[in-house]
Amino acid sequence: MVADMQSRSSAPRTGRPRSAEADEAILAATRAALVDLGWSGLTLGDVATRAGVAKTTLYRRWAGKNELVVDAVAALFDELELPDRGSLAADIEIVVLQFAAILSRPEAKTALMAVVAESTGDAALRDRIRSSIVDRQKHLVTQGRARAQARGELPVENDPETAARGTDLIFDVIAGAVVHRCLVSSKPVDTDWAGDFTRLLLNGLTGVSPA
Amino acid sequence: MVADMQSRSSAPRTGRPRSAEADEAILAATRAALVDLGWSGLTLGDVATRAGVAKTTLYRRWAGKNELVVDAVAALFDELELPDRGSLAADIEIVVLQFAAILSRPEAKTALMAVVAESTGDAALRDRIRSSIVDRQKHLVTQGRARAQARGELPVENDPETAARGTDLIFDVIAGAVVHRCLVSSKPVDTDWAGDFTRLLLNGLTGVSPA
DNA sequence: CGCTTTCGCTACGGCCCGTAGCGTAACTGT
DNA sequence: ACAGTTACGCTACGGGCCGTAGCGAAAGCG
Image (cartoon, rainbow over all chains, first blue to last red; front, side, top):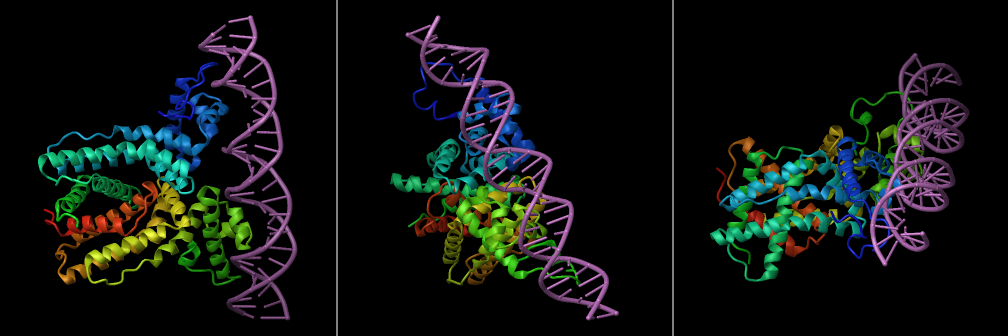
């Protein structure tokens, strides 16, 4: 979703409309190509062929490889959800395992790191990644925290600015640790590791409150 | 250092030796090119020109862009050290800030993520990254933990296998969180954030010990 | 039915890749 | 001193992908 710049602002009222099937076919072809060839092996010409679409059509909708792949991969992360397991520990563990499951898919692995690498020199791409992928999942943290506060497991934050800082911190710790474990250490995120990590984070959150 | 496969095993005893200056010139040129062009813009022909070396010389020593960049960037992380600041909290904070300082350099940013992305489909590259960069810094964790145990801040681990698991976990959490903060959230790792993170991790480590 | 926009297709210059071939330079053992 | 061996700089090449231009046809709208 949220493919090009044209669908956001006023779409042209006249002329032939863009094919919605083509959009989905292109994104699916991109994911398939990522699985087969990886980020560096992926070429826009190949994606166009797989999608049964002309290469020029592809360039009309996306500025380049980076933007295309961000959109193609963003949908994968919408699978994340947070069923109420009754305790903060269980909630953390389940989201860690879900996130790791997504990262185990080859298209997610190779694409995520690559677009982040490209984004280091491209502010617009950085914003696109954040709005399409990262910020969309941040509600999981606020949701889990709210539940924990309702259960009395966590203290209630008074200052909204402090709460936002805490949310960002928790998100960076969880996402960062799982990504690092999966892609850098390349060791499995099984229930053992998820349990260890959950205990560590839980102790950190429920321990002595910050100054 | 540790450039090619030839320097590890028995170097040829006969013939013209490889130029050591060329090695360093190439790696320096690679870092410079990463700053100017980023990962995707870097070409081996350009690196060779910058280094004042023929392109063929480059291909004799490195299999490709991935391996070259890993070696070029590995040296950056050797700056990390752990001066004894007297408390575990201070030790964590200082290493977080040091790591963030390295990640603030554009050549480190773009190269690290890119080679990790490439490594998702290349086991040999994954091992090269681990042995050249990651595992080299793991001693910081064991060192900091040993000091904290000597101070009585942390309990002593009896089982060496449990201790290793803990080391890996701490490493993933620290490195992962800092990387995520810098490159994905793209927010500054200042003393405020480092302090928040340190409190969180410290509480997690000193809290109720794992089952 | 005109107007507008998208679509598929072809073709193109340009850049970079990775290798081959050559003559030269550097170092080693006899 | 001399042959043997390896690294070096240089040039050249086929091949692949890029990103765009130009065309005729198709699909909507008033």
